[in-house]
Image (tube, rainbow, N blue to C red; front, side, top):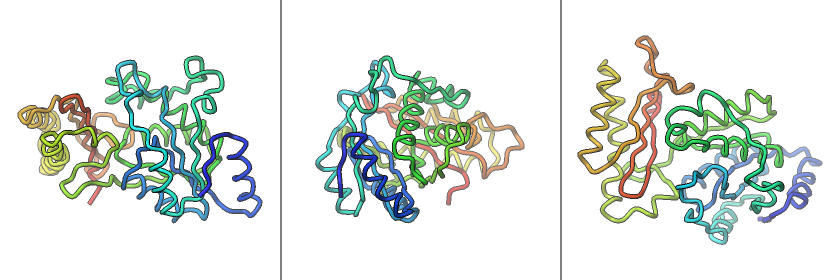
Length: 284
């Protein structure tokens, strides 16, 4: 596997593949790779003969009180894991490569509507950073496919909207959330959970399952959301939201919204850790 850090080297590798008419799939990541990321890589390999994985901890999607400096950076370990799975190319740019004018003065992309709810309320500006860095990666790599996980559901919808509104010539592929045996969604931040927190963390997924079951039984969504928040609070969580929404728009569901088009989403703090998860009602 080749690792490149600059645009000239990236373009040289991509040019050689395109001259052979080989399609390219991109797996964007922030590194600290785990089994969930590797599942994205394997899905990308099903889409195209050449796969680029990117590792870049993007400063513009972190708020002033968030963990940008603390976010785990494990490039050597990530290189080894990707190479073991036959990834073709790792693009690990510096901040200067991604933001040549500086991250403070960089061009910024805002996706209206869907970025102003849920995570957008609790992390102002986060999705502007996400949309901007994803657009940059799409422009630099020009992939035929890009693979994202469903765990960051709102981010996935932002990326889909970005691709659709800008008419980008690539297909967005979504992969269901990869979980531990007890239901906890895989996340690079899980390593910061202590033993007691790790034992409680799967309650988020259990609560999502309960929300879906209650909605399927016809219970009022507002009642379900309130009960879900109370359930988590009793276990020591501090929920930011426990909601049922229309999956593709994240708008509150009307009474006649088809069940399969809905999704439950939770964000909750456990000590200093903030965990997010979701459950599409159409999922098995």
